[in-house]
Length: 161
Image 1: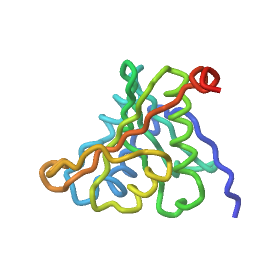
Image 2: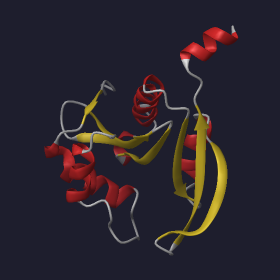
Image 3: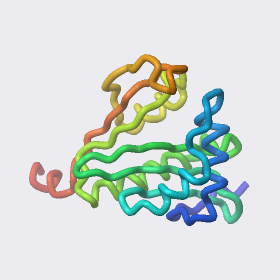
Image 4: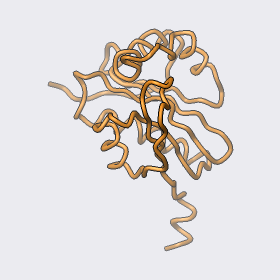
């Protein structure tokens, strides 16, 4: 199997597929909030990067990150179940983190369901640490964990060397 894939900025025609993957892989058992119109608005928002990964066909992963002042917020990241454990999620996250670094962001924050052990392990592996547990974070139905990563910018690494 060819594991080559590409990552690109999402376009408006990706909104339905992103919303569908969010519904099945992130928002399962919750009311659907990342509907196609909401995803479309994120794609159109200049302060947000929506990226997709594909292998020459339908998208297999996506990430949505909002950039504000010196903090970015990873709103969503999902990989289709058939494409997991191949480095695709890590690549999408690295793409978004690189943009954040270039933009001068010092921290990236995100949330995950408290019972989503694989997601929490994924983010910890990538340098995120737990900031807080929030009861009822997900529409009062699920508890959540807030995570954060501090980014060291290239100029700071050179200065500290």
